[in-house]
Image (tube, rainbow, N blue to C red; front, side):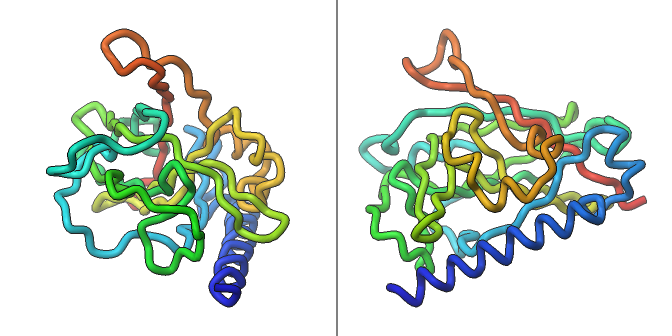
Length: 226
C-alpha cells in the first residue's frame, strides 16, 4: 500500500509539472489563439483513466443498469458547449468524463485509497455534442482524497474531448466552493485566469429535478487542427 501511495503521489506531482509546463507554452496552443475564445487549459489525465467497462456508455453516471438504487452522493448536472478557437460550436465531439465516487475512490485497481467503492456508481460516462455543440451529464459530486500526507485532491472531474480534425483535450473540472482548491498542486499550476476556466460554480438545479440537486455550466474550447 505504501508503494502504491508513493507511485500515485509521484504521478500526480509529475502531472502538476506537466500542466505548468504546458501553460508556460500557452497550453500547447499559440497565445494569440488562446486569447481568442478562452481555450480550455489542458491538465494531467491522472493515473485512474478507466479500463474496460461492463456497461454501455451514456451520460448518466448515477445508475448502473439493473441496480436496485442510484449511487450515493449529491446529484449534480453538468452542461456546456464545446467550441473551437473562433467560438464556433463543435458538433459531434466525443466527451468523456471519469471521477471518484462520493467516498473519493476510483473504480481502478491502481487506486490505493482504502475508502469504499460504490457498486451503484458508474465512475465513467460518455456522450457526443449536438449540432449546437452542447453536451450534458448527470453524476454525483466526487469526494476529495489524499494524494499525499499533506495534499488532498479537491473534488474534480476528468474530461477528455476529441473529434477528427481537432486537437484533443484532457482537462479537469473543479468545484468553486471546495476548500482544497487553494492548495491543490495541479490546479494551482495554472495561472489564475486559466484556473477560472476550469472552476465551476454550482447552484440549485431547479424545478423538475431531484431535491438538493446542483447544476453547473462548463463550456469547453478546443483548437481546430486545420
